Image 1 (cartoon, helix red, strand yellow):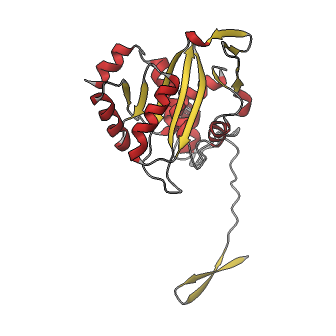
Image 2 (cartoon, helix red, strand yellow):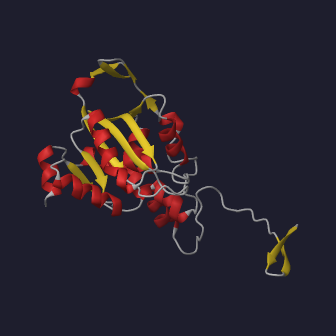
Image 3 (cartoon, helix red, strand yellow):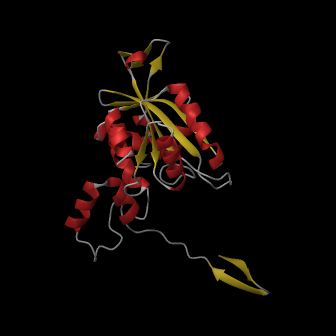
Length: 253
């Protein structure tokens, strides 16, 4: 089997070699370099990182990192949100927003993404999502619109190029914005979120199709901005103090 490739005015024929990976699922790429004990230890410590770095397959052996069978859906009316049989008054929810800004509108650019969520016990309740391509000149307007819609305790923004502008502008206007530091890569940041999904502690309602698509395709999908926002939600609120005094302390430190 072959194909014709063009290089300038030359025509070159190449043979295509079919390669079937002889390894069983989970076997090391280079067993001579890494002992089975070390290999299994790495796998046990982080299934996501293991698959991405040591198997050259950025999804787990059993499929995607986030699985549809782990998705849990709440129901709601004007007064209550229902997590299964448990009824929670909407007025009792503490609401937050995590935001991953982007600054171009090219077809390959990431979106300006926001996840609005509440915390109840150990549950993350996704209330709303926003993801659109947006110019930097519209960031403040988008932030204001999202804040007015949900009145969050604070908005948390990833502290990178475009996020720094948002944080500085918000601080100068007395608006509570929590800077987020991107510790590690997106796969690393998603690990606590993956655990919470497996334990049935993340809830959203039917209709969040873009969020579901990004979760199911992560980390191989074209876009993962909402996944990263949700991962930050897990890390920020569940692993750190969420009181407003701490927010201001971090902003003006």
